[in-house]
Length: 183
Image 1 (tube, rainbow, N blue to C red):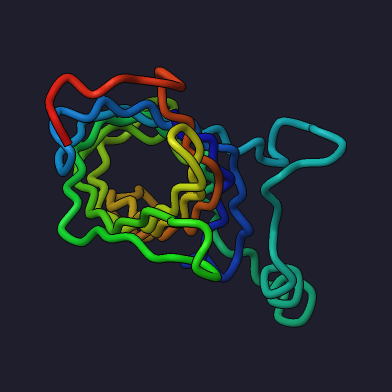
Image 2: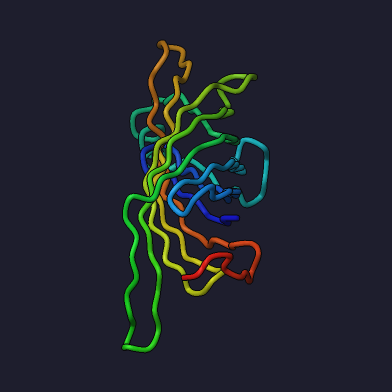
């Protein structure tokens, strides 16, 4: 289980922020499959303290030029993916603690709901991540994911790269285990 918080990096007009939950099953030490979901809590729903809101650039464009850019507020995402670990290793800290780390690649797909349509849109997902294990059941996760989809604007359809930086913790279950084979 991965509990993460995501921050949108690609949209200059809108600040997308979201809690993210990923569930993964490791088929082998290098391959895993999983599902993920995010809810963006945008200000279009009337929350007093929305996580996602317009940026200072949006406010400046609307105030200075009296232009009102089309907003495509992301509301939620759900998808499935596969991950591969091409690089992993261990290092010793102060010659006392040994930490495991890995870099992983993610690819998958799903659906994304935006404020511009009543039905969810198909989305492709690619990403890269880094994980640092503190012990057998807890790790720090940092990752970049790119959500690729087509948005319907009044001026026409646009291909969108919604890049998210996500940071959080991985919780491995079961918390303790015994090796079935000799180490």
